[in-house]
Amino acid sequence: MGIVEPLTAIFREVFDDEEITLAREMTADDVDGWDSLSHVNLIVTIEARFNIKFTQKELLTFKNVGDLMDSIQSKLPA
Image (cartoon, rainbow, N blue to C red):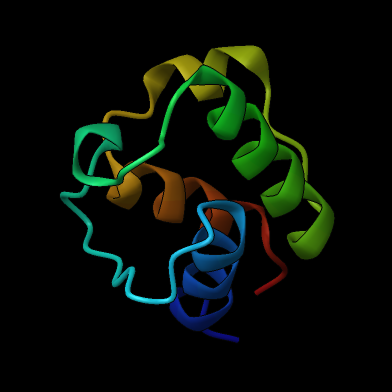
């Protein structure tokens, strides 16, 4: 299963913006409204939809959407 489409849908839902197109180098600075509260909502929604959990340490290592995608992919069954 690819993660880009469902992850894009999550971003669009959390940030209420149907125009969001994900790119690996995208950061919070690139998305209107991506603040600390929306970040928590984003992570919780991702965890629920993909049925995964991030550790606090993992969350602190994400520098961009690409890092987030890689982490999600590593937690999904092969």
